[in-house]
Length: 280
Image (cartoon, rainbow, N blue to C red; front, top):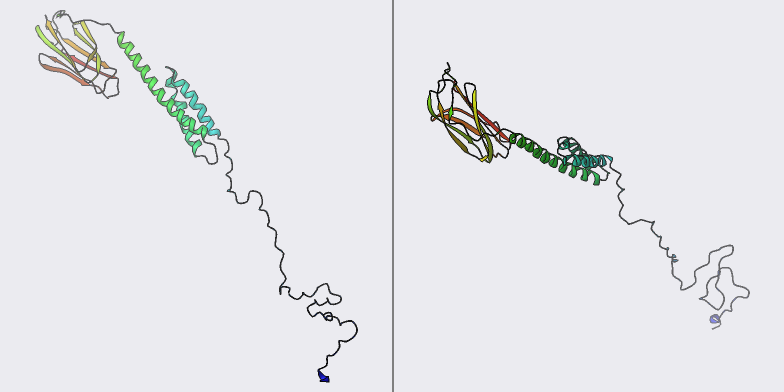
């Protein structure tokens, strides 16, 4: 029984590192010369880490990258200036013949300005469009000017209403012309649209003529010709069409026999054809 008797705690202060007497749950005192304390009972086994404060992203982070601004386009600006000059020239009747050069230059420079990288394309596109418009206007105005000039010149030709029924031969001639007597001469013009036709008959230095103004094609004219002598004769026909939609053709017949025929070279809108029958 005496062995089981409680042993009183030793007197004096507790040894270093021992818990205080009478409180087994108390924390151990820190060792001498150490800044680290023992964890208290009931504390977590591992020390907790203080939360890291969020770091603000740099300005502009996460936003899509912006494209660099386009630079000026001097080639497109020159194309626009040339196109404006060409458009002004194109509407003038005489200057329209020269408007094609700046218009073509504006078209070429406009295309170059559009394919340049990193350049603004507004001036180049405007120069290309205006250059094409100026070229079309120049062609139209020039065509109208040429057609008006030709029409005025045709209108200034002297107009004879009809052939005389009898052409004097002026005496005998060694040429193998038409025999004396009456002959039927038929002038024909084929094509489409309208035409102005001029007829002329020459017999031994004397001539007579007639003209049909703006007749619908195809057209024919019959003339009764009376020859009093045996000299040579020459029959002429000329036709011009300003609105022709096909080639012009012409022929001359005497007493049912064709003595001359011809056809215009191309179908270009302004057609001219002539027939010439030299009978001696």
